Amino acid sequence: MSSAAPQPKITLYWLNESRAQRIVWLLEELHVDYSVEIFHRKDMLAPPELERVHPLGKAPVVTIDAPTGKVVLAETGFISQYLCDHFAQGTNLVPSRYPSGQQDGVVGGETEEWMRLQYFMHYAEGSLMPPLLIAVILSVLKGPKIPFFIRPITSAVANKIFSSFVFPNIAKHLQFLESQLATSPNGGQYLCGAHLTPADIILSFPLLAVRDRFGSMDISVEQTGVKLLDQYPKLWAYVARLEQEDGFKRAEAKIEKLEAENVKASL
Image (cartoon, rainbow, N blue to C red; front, side, top):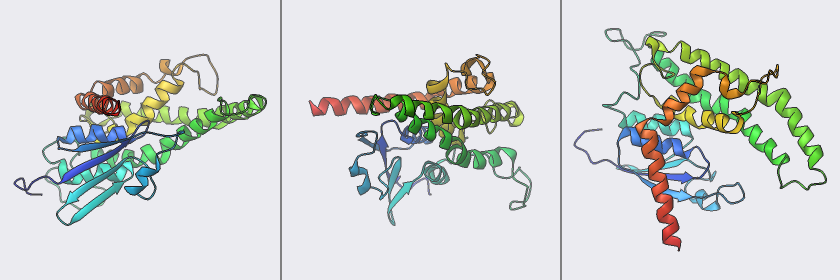
């Protein structure tokens, strides 16, 4: 895009307790102008109004009023990739694909930073999120929506699945990410090297969810009594750094302000 061309209008459709907050953060890092439409869940589900934006009625969704017509983007990884393809120039968000001085297009010639970015942008939703979604579903079986007289049975079933499947899978992922941080290119403090990337932003949602939901528990197979937060020191230090990123804070503040304005307008 020419630097002289006006920026297309960008709108993010945001839903509470969803992955949409990561796109707010990404847009802040891209330093683009954008607006946010706020939606809230009803009985844990997205409101039907979101279906007017995208048939699946989920968030995040981004629309861009482009010269050729409206572009509708769904799925966090695709949204992130598309936005970075068009608006990340002049930032450090996307590593160089090929080393300087080497011929582009050589199979296997990509930089480690770029390869990690591509992998982790798919990994977050494809591998890390599924066991967390199962955990959310299982938690319903232990909650007040289940009649009290059968709750002991459903809780026992949920606990068995937690211990035999969910927790071992989550622990495996956390150990993997700990090792990836230990081998970050050029000793970087992010998963893809020295700079924050969309992969770090995308991974923030599931990692914060794991920390907040299971941090005080021992989810290890051995049940040693050691809290989750006392394991994987590099990983939790990394998560704490992500929360201190200026873009993360700006994104949180933006949504808090919009939410407050919505409440005030409804009074």
